[in-house]
Length: 121
Image (cartoon, rainbow, N blue to C red):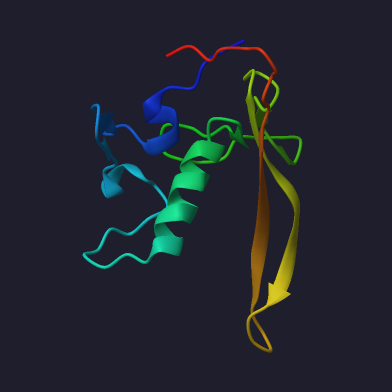
């Protein structure tokens, strides 16, 4: 089984010491950094960053999706990590106005605890 790195969950500039976890807003690709980002924006950005280690679409260096026979090439590492699993559950669309719709992605996070197992640092 593989271990997730600090960067794979919190972005490339994440650091930690004994007291603090520092997350660079600019390392969260779905967030537009500002002085007053709302808590929900930050949480969603962290979840989407973390989700990218579990599932996603394979893209070129220019961020273009790779299609094969009309299907986008994707990956699913959700079963690779021993004690944590994240995946998108049944995306759906909801109306935001009479003519516009938004895609709603439900992200499921599962943490597995094993009795008698001591988690390593």
